[in-house]
Image (cartoon, rainbow, N blue to C red; front, side, top):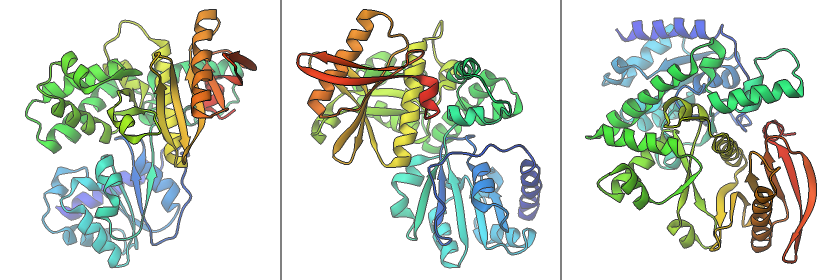
Length: 415
């Protein structure tokens, strides 16, 4: 049976390698050959494709997809390894997909490395494969993060050169539908695809894994959170909104949703760690498509969608570049959407505003930036908009700074 499963997976792999592939931006430079490469990210974001196309690149390798309940029930992994060695003609490089599904995966991986195998492993669970990597993998390892398509990656399947208006139109499509690769590459119905995927993540990656007794409570929390992206919250306020039994339960469920790459939170910026931990957080979704597919809304809230898309892009950039990301708010309720911290210094302050043509709106955004700039000692100020593009000097109560305004589609493309 094991040999048959591995053989069928090999045939499926060969078919998939014939499909069109979009080069991914991982922020990763290939290291020495004896490192365990750990590809981490959301389910169906293209982790295994990335490994096949950008990490093995024509090398002789063996492949195993452990997202198969028949393989997870095998007691002796050596039986699986033997089948791989026969079918792939004794490869030295192994690509093990969704490794977290097999019991004692870390012991198996460490043993394979000691036996001289080069390893590339993938997983959907960020806690299992990021925060605990140093504990689990005694050998050297390199985490590689693959998320859903950025706007730049979203445009890559288009072979024709696009005009600026055409890029704006594509940006609006991406802003609504998100960047999951499969619907784009295969022309699938995005909403139906993401509804099924969301339920799969919820019930397969979380409910089943953590043996949650009241899955409806988890689902209600997840739906409420993705319906309220870019919103400040406390654990107590969520308890009241979704009628969960305790703050502890909310905290636990939220952690599960974060480690499964559905949602992420930003802390309030402070130079004091205690204040960061005590402050409210803001909630964001890794991909706008989930909000459109599963969230509660009667119309597109373009401002929230734009802020969420910027948050997700900043999260990825900060992860790749080793930076930290926060939001800022003072006692007068003036707020800056994003604070980027490099080392001990604040390197950039960013506001997101759909339309800054209204004087009151512009005044609010500028005042908050100038005040935060003064308090946090940061002169790099940016407002991401839909249309406005300029650089202008503003002053307020003795604080004088230049602020750049950049259309979101251009900022996403690094222009």
